[in-house]
Image 1 (cartoon, rainbow, N blue to C red):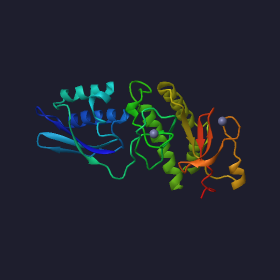
Image 2 (tube, rainbow, N blue to C red; image 1 turned 90 degrees about the vertical axis):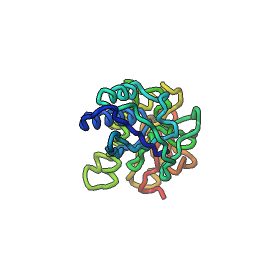
Image 3 (cartoon, protein in one colour; image 1 turned 90 degrees about the horizontal axis):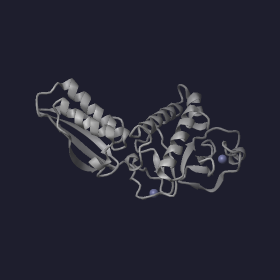
Image 4 (tube, rainbow, N blue to C red; image 1 turned 180 degrees about the vertical axis):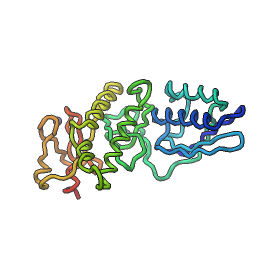
Length: 257
Ligand SMILES: [Zn+2]
Ligand SMILES: [Zn+2]
């Protein structure tokens, strides 16, 4: 991933509140299109310009050819508050982040995230590396906001179950049960992405707990009830894989070494 800086020059006197709001709108639109990652974008104000620091999945993520309609509109709205379209400076590669997937068309892909991840939740099945969302057709209303909102909810549940102090069980049910509201939303998104990309798209069900290792090893697919265990774990995480149900899962973390 790449650390970049966006500079917004003021071409007239600006109202700071309006300028901040317009910049925020653009950053949101870029985020919902997968062109910038994460939730926090330090923005500073200088004499005659504003600058925001962002992280992008690729060196050219902010090229106009990747813009969604919402991003284009947000850039047009900058002018109404006295700001010019942003100038981009690539600062360098981000050292502590995943590398973006290189496949032009992966054999399969999956929706996967954790509370620690800021990268795209769509990953190549073969390399397990993130696929920038702007590379696939928009899932709804011109961008990927629905995917980002699903990711935020998944990460919030994961954070709650990791902390284990409040709402742990409710969070685990959302992450692990195929019929939970979170899973239904995620599986619908995976279906939609599969339809748009023509690439089989799987959904990950988190698994923890269970009575014994033996029982967990024999756990059937919660979708169809068939055997879905893999002979070898995949990417050190997935021990179960059901092609027709488009589901993957892990051997309960309680019994996985
Ligand atoms: Zn790949
Ligand atoms: Zn199944």
